Length: 226
Image: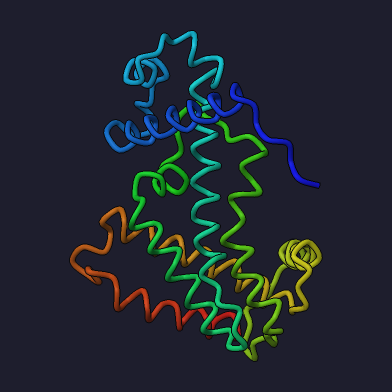
């Protein structure tokens, strides 16, 4: 069924919501998440604060909208990069590269979701789904590749094995528990490497990080059994 066309009021609201978020992103680049102010956003848009509160009742509501948008943007970049070829390593590499490209092109939004926690802000449950999109793109590669359990593995505690078994069911992936744990490790390596690169931790070692990142992609593909 075709969706009913939006009314003029709905179109105006959607456009103003977009303008508010665009201005908030501009402020993120200047003052960071901690300095984000609804009053400052309203002032730059020529609005009174009370009018803006009808769109975002608090700074935390606006932050949540920006966080969800950022998670969805990097997730969409990862998903769209997947060529869905028969070679899982090609797919793996494409997702890693696209995630890095988005992070480098949007450093302030990346910092909002993967940088330092914002004092006093508690992310609500509706950020969880968008936050997992890159991870699920990587899991889709593993799901189709059916990797085997590595020959050499570290002992796994009963608690960790139970967590791995639960993840296996949630992700609907036919893989040994060790592979699932290695996938968590690779996901952590991806964003750990991006944090080091974007926040200047590679200066004096592997900066620029292009060659290292390409090497890491292959390492992690081997690590998860692709």
